[in-house]
Amino acid sequence: MGKYGVKITRATCAFRTTSTTRHFDNKLSTPSSRRSFAMADIDVQVAQWKLVEVGRVVLIRSGPFTGKLAAIVEIVDHKRVLVDGPSTEEQKIVPRHVLPLSHATLTHFVIPRLPRAAGTGPVKKLWQKEEIDGKWAKSNFAQKTERAERRKNLTDFERFKVLRLRKQARYEVQKAHAKLRAAAPKS
Image (tube, rainbow, N blue to C red):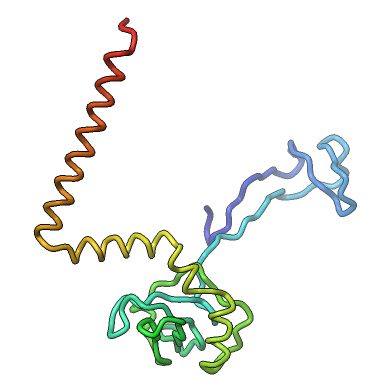
């Protein structure tokens, strides 16, 4: 990946063309039949960055709404955004407020065609249409945080049971592995 997120996948120099290129009529030209030369023949791929944009869904990382999702409705300045989280579940609703970007994590979900400074009604309608809550629940990040939260809330006895179950599973795997090694031909 080069500077500014541009990936150069193939490059040739002037008069030393070794690759084929497509012309405007979609016909391939070989290096010997090329009449003009190019200073560089490159394929450019733009990086898949998560941009701060209107409609981008963010995960709030600190403050009273920690762990909840909200959509960027308006960009206030380079450090703050106006967010609104009209979730379909009552306990996950985030009221409209200004959020510092240092308290948010950008997700890869975007609500397309969300107008700037849209009210809560249009945001809620597009949120439900895009099924943001369902997509978030299926994402790896959400599942991993749910597992970590569930594990964090275990009691001492539940932690002990998990330890015993993991030990038992490890024993069964080792037993099956030993059986396979014993059955394998010796050389």
